[in-house]
Length: 122
Image 1 (cartoon, one colour):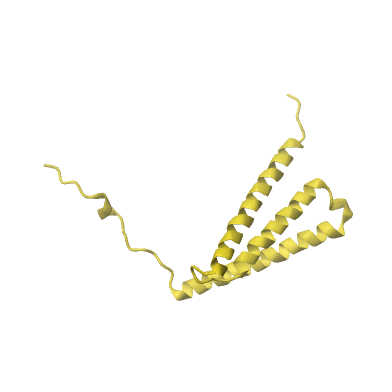
Image 2: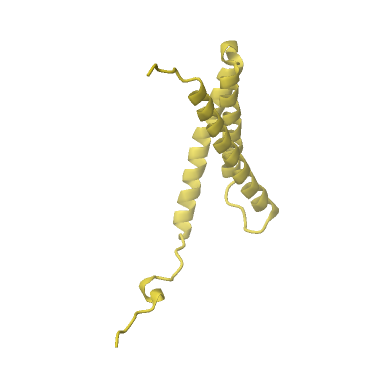
């Protein structure tokens, strides 16, 4: 007879959690990265606003992408909200919404770049 080992015997089933120090470190790093990203997005928007030559359709898409990034950064800078609170829900919705907006805008920008690429003769 053949003895078969049950599949669950191969997997470590204990959940993996971060300790308090690791969670504080992750939150600090997320806030630091969000602050740097926020500064970059504000620089992009200020440049777009100041220089009239940049206020064309393609750069307007970049400005919208910077706005979406500001929304994402704001959500991350809200900190760690208690699960189940209204602030937690708002933060989750903001993270999902603004990240999706950024993905869609990146797709639109990539498509626009593809459409206006120089065509080579074959």
